[in-house]
Figure 1 (cartoon, one colour):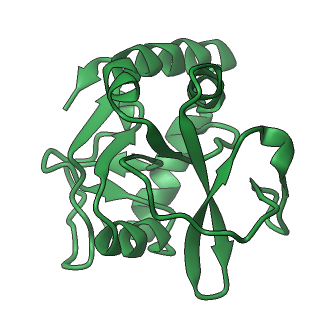
Figure 2 (figure 1 turned 45 degrees about the horizontal axis):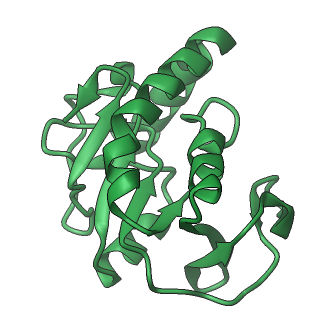
Length: 176
């Protein structure tokens, strides 16, 4: 199956989860992620949208412990990460995605929490198709942790030479 077909399959699979299941799975993933969050002080994390693993609890936990939080912003020439101290420093972009108002990029990220639609046994991810994260992760050194639902495992996912392998993937069932 080609990547566009896999994206559609896994988007639909995520959408089929009830709101309650989504929240329970997100909480389990957060608990498995805690040891990584406790280890690092500079954490890159996406602001979740509907049907993604919920990252608001992760972000709030980091703020409460004075961790440095960096969230993505898409620009014409790629993606940057901007340090924020509150989600109030963000606004919806033209695609309806919450992102920082500031364009002041930072490269201090030690731990990057990466969104994904699907993954394979070699810890490669299927993203949304724009390769923003692959390009960013290729150019920056940090621990790369993907978070995803177990149901989004995809044996048919074949990575390309430009795909970046993650250090680990966390699902509601544990760490891969």
